[in-house]
Image 1 (cartoon, rainbow, N blue to C red):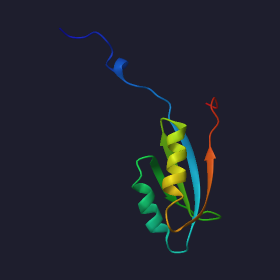
Image 2: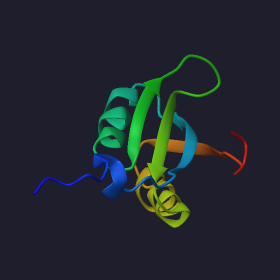
Image 3: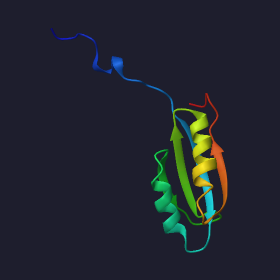
Length: 94
């Protein structure tokens, strides 16, 4: 017997927590840092930039704690990163 339920009924529509991380790294290490950032599941976008920062990374996870852990224990531990600035959105701004 075929189900009459919509196919999306069993899907989980959870909101993701998103943070943008501005990164300064050692001169000439941008490609290596970008490559390492792309290896993290929670890093969904990475862009090299011109200006005050060298790299912009978008970090997403279902829980804010996972985003924090990724930034603190993965991104900030990359050897050639000098500094980071994290920007996190405010709930309800949609």
